[in-house]
Length: 301
Image 1 (cartoon, one colour):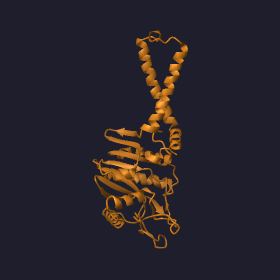
Image 2 (cartoon, one colour):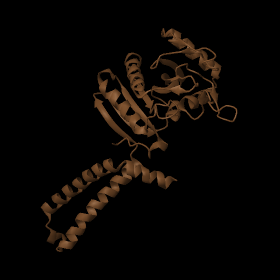
Image 3 (cartoon, helix red, strand yellow):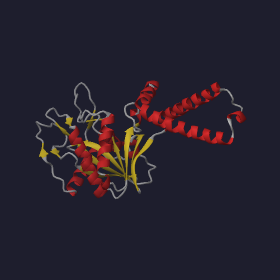
Image 4 (cartoon, one colour):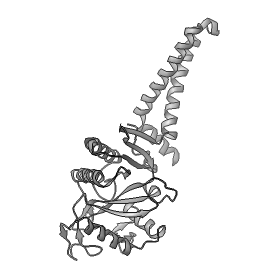
């Protein structure tokens, strides 16, 4: 399984590997040219044309093998944009581990994608419930479960804190679902892009970002256009509230939000929104691609 993932990762990164391989190759040939300017081939003891060709081929092979090794196994981050102290990067990691890392010294802002009702009821899918309100497999679900277990904050308390923050920021629901439309969880529906702030302790602040709304089948939905609007709203919110602290944002719209995005499309949308709004960037933004998704999307393309 791991070998398949590595092969898939290699295929996705073919173009970055070729580019890096050419860079390494060029550097090695430059070094060789400098060496030969001091010592001729004959002085080094190389007189055969075939040996020279073999050296050329060996340098090329070594360069591309090294490039493949570095990108597939070693490199985990890429700088996308920088201006002064402001920067945008993408890296492979785990947004939940970043959220609950007890060794955190620098202040972090972690984006958690949520539904329009800011629900806090995590359920498992089974024969009696094939449509959980919040799946434990989503970032939203994992965040709530970690708040419960690691910070000892109940779902009820989380919900109350969210409601209090929404009121503090002056947000009003744009719709109130009926029990027929939504038979469990909160009924107040907030606009896409609405952001609630929850303190996670240990220098961590959570931005709960609404990226999906419920349909008549009680399933979360969002279009690609609306998802782009959500990211733009988040960046505007970060510009006003972030105070220059590093913002960590996971790929969104690839799972149960049903935007139908591939991991590459999600990464491209986030990068595009950020670079379009670069004047609003006052700090650092880190796009977090889940470690296990290396075979689905390249951060180096």
